[in-house]
Length: 307
Image 1: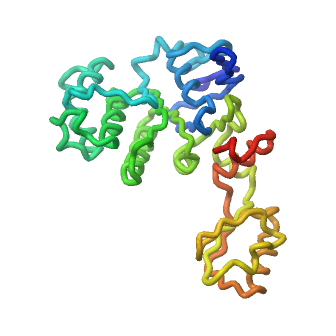
Image 2 (image 1 turned 135 degrees about the vertical axis):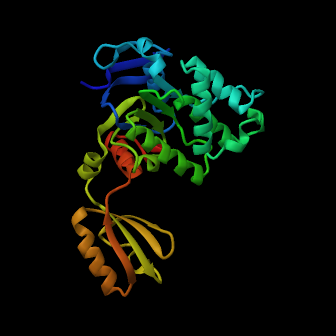
Image 3 (image 1 turned 180 degrees about the horizontal axis):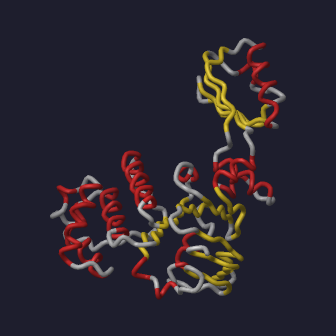
């Protein structure tokens, strides 16, 4: 039995359809990515899971029959619109939310110190929230989301406002929480963020599911139709090659989309024959962004729709 299941969920706001017949299931202890561009319906879907708004049709269940209202104390929710009491001190605002989630004061104080150390924010414990940078405040809000050790963690655009170092820190903590038994569902419009995190993904566009499957299965289904090339000199001799569908040349490094997966041998032969000094030539799986663009185009959309 799935831990969380959505069946044929539909939501309209006036004449606008935000979510159309979405179905997916999430297994306990997994990391699930809800992906798509801004406006795709990700936040609406998460808000329906949280019972902040109700679906017009369809069902959302936990472990087969539990309604979210019977399960709220076991959920940690990080909304896209961040909100902390800005005049409160860091310790006090985390303590306040931890007690709302059922932690006793002494237990919460110990968890606050532990989490601030994990987040490299221990020295800020007595500072007011409005003294923090945007990235620091984002990390504090993450702490308030997970401090009560929820069974289900819902993160809406969790990497927004973080620099690369703190993005890596947050990714590591998410994986740690998953390994400790939490189930995590997070939304993002940046496909690269889920490549090494998610067990399964749901790719949505204009409120509809384009792809829903295990990440490895999704990539395997699209095949290896791209090549990464490191080279010395210039790729001008092969820029109009019959084997190339698209070329992103960054100077000494290039990403090449092939017209067919089998044409990589012909491309490599052409590179050699035309005297391009190749130091690395690797056939790779398409990125999630490339998969998304292909999926949108297959539905009659445009590349702009996928951005």
